[in-house]
Image 1 (cartoon, each protein chain N blue to C red):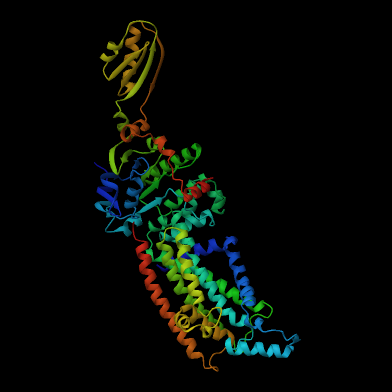
Image 2 (image 1 turned 180 degrees about the vertical axis):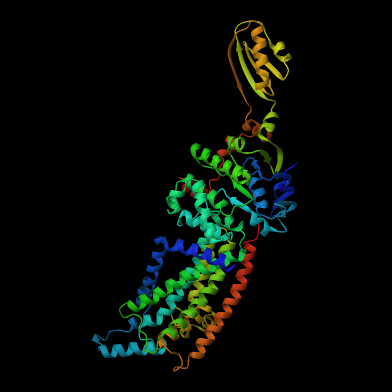
Length: 288
Length: 333
């Protein structure tokens, strides 16, 4: 099954790479999200620059901004530093949810018929769908990280941020992506039209994103919203990745346990979504 | 000695969602090495039958075997021996012709070295060897159809299912496709099970034909057997003024019916070639001059019309107008 899964994944990735119309928007989206959210949602912009017509000294403004970032945004050097993990999670969520469109096109254009009459395990169709979307989303996620580093006043890493922290952050994001890919691939295999998929995705996406700490810390949420945000897998991936990106090595700040706990939670999410998705996909791929 | 039955369908029935009976207790057999044509109006059950045989659709009732393997009980074994060329053009636009073939070979577990060799041979067979390295999106409709055929053959299947293999092709490309299919059948002994809208295609390629309508097989046999059901050829003969020779013509063996108007005789006979010399000789012996003589052989379209009450040409106009049909049509250009 592995060989068929890899063959089908290769096919999808070749098509993706060779079609700039599908790759380029992904690249722009990463830069756009960071620039847009990084400026429009930046709470430090709310600090008045003058009081009673008297300009506030630059040093005082800087101190006020630093205090907000330290108390509300986990000690991030800039708001984009805080935001980077959230934006990468957003990119992953959107790519996973709409990634199923290719599968629906394959079904509508008859390619599925060709696959289903080939001597390949049905599961390889499902797993290749999961894998191709994960690879695409992770590529765009890494790209967003690089763009965040390049943006003026953007992502500022601490001296303790190294390869392990980078891998840890993207492990958390990858697990989120894998779980979501299992879910959305199964949905894409089950629905017959792109319209249906978009309707379901729109129904799920916005609540998932806004009931998470992607763009804003959940500590500022009302109790009921915080309760939901705390069990939202996007929040878990975001929290783990954010600690590693903002703080670097999480041990000195005593947050290693939080990171490990989040990763374990995400592994559980992948297992549940994988099993559920596989069952749904198996049913969707069975003979008419 | 009778040939091996490579496809056997027995009371094959498909009911969708417990309500719509698409195929209703059909039974037929396909012999190894033959080209079998499956004809019928839109919605008659052709595609559903193919889907059941190639494991895409479950069988509600009845039984089918392909190469001796039970389609319901052992679908994986069936998939090992079949090739399917669907009506849709499913080759990937963004992949090169050769890449499409090698991907299909890999999915059929053909070793890479062997797959490369076969791909080159097949591309040569379908005249695409010079376009192998081009992306499929640059291919014409005819090239895509030929590539589709090559993809269906890359794993050298024992049985090839073709669903409207020449739909939308110009007559020249269609004729070339018939030549490829004939060569495949003769040289490699591949059994071909095909549906087609083009009755001349079925007539020229198929050894046997079944016509299906409303989910049931109405008639089956060789093209000539089916045409003979109509009562034979029509000979039209115009004579100079003279006596009525209707009775004389009716007395000639093999003549089944004669009608006359204004010295123009329409003579129905099972085999025009056999009765023609006797007719010409008899009329001439009676001192009559033949002004004009012609005969038409019955066509499969006439058979189709008699069986289904519809002409296949009427069916052509009823193609799907779905968005994806438009996409497929666009690919054909």
